[in-house]
Amino acid sequence: MSASGAKNAALPLMFATLLAPGPHRLGNLPRLRDIRTAEQLLTGLGARVQSENGTLQVTTDALNGKEAPYDLVRTMRASVLVLGPLLARCGRARVSLPGGCAIGARPINLHLKGLEAMGAEITLDHGYVEARAKRLQGARIYLDTPTVGGTENLMMAATLAQGTTVIENAAREPEISDLAVALCGMGARIEGAGSDTIVIEGVDSLGGMDHQVMPDRIEAGTYLIAAALTGGRIKVNNARPEHMEALLSKLEEAGAECSVEEDGILVAGPREILPVNIKTQPHPGFPTDMQAQFMTLMTLCSGSSMITETVFENRFMHVCELQRMGADITIEGHTATIKGVPGLLGAPVMATDLRASACLVLAGLAADNTTEISRIYHLDRGYESLEEKFRSLGADIERVPTAS
Image (cartoon, rainbow, N blue to C red; front, side):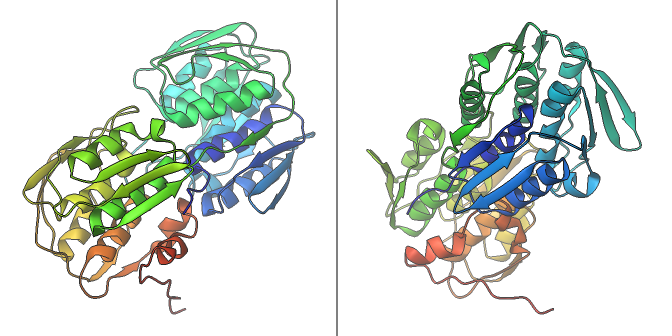
């Protein structure tokens, strides 16, 4: 099986097309709900969007809108990433405040602080951010925490600023490097993406984008954990080991065999799952987006393990659902202690967010009897054809229509 294009890379790439008139082309685009929402937002801003067979064509010659409305931002927080590109190109942007979400509040204050340092005038008006600038100016920006969205927003804005912008304590996620490669292909001048210091020398104008979205490291990791959990063997084509070093290290610590091959990664599950402690951290640490899936693996370990969540304050909501399936998990503050049990039992459970949905699917694959997961619309935000891919690996899984 192959990893689809990464949602967390595709969304900022789609919004980066706003920086320049174009045609723009994005390949390896995943078929996801969030991608459709981003297409609606681009269309509302005046772009012409055409999507077919994983390729997106975007024409942004004449933008007739400069607002990201609440109805779209509330369904997809990444919509706030239109702020930097719109402001840089049009001199004005109006974007709804995203508010909180199920896994905790994710404020955009660092986005706004950085734009103000570049000369933007920022005001808040009835739940919207209003930003104006005749032309952004290069600045030295220190991020108090290495925010992924903030780094992306400021990097995009800085491509058209006058002078040089330096972003310090920048996020280092691979998706930021992928965005930088695409922006440089449009004519931007960026150095240091993937490190904690990014230097952007502003240019007067950019050209069209032609870029292939990187493979989804979180989707790939979810399938690799499935192999470890069920004692199976799964090879994920296109997966890039350099993006997944922390996860692969922890899978090997749990007893799985991990092999890096020329065209992907192969994982074979262990006879006995060993206990492993993890602590989520910004990249290159263990990703918070893999925490719930790894917790499912630890429910069947031979001993006790601890998982500490440091990125989001409310990302243990899947614990109650795993407990319904027989998992032995206790929570104290930001740490969950998992005592391995002989097996999980199928039960009706409810998904609370995207990665919690995936962890419950994994639990269902390993559990005795039938597991029924409701609210699976969360899955469709980040996994392309998940049930079809698992069926191709031999899983007994199907999507059942809900009663109207």
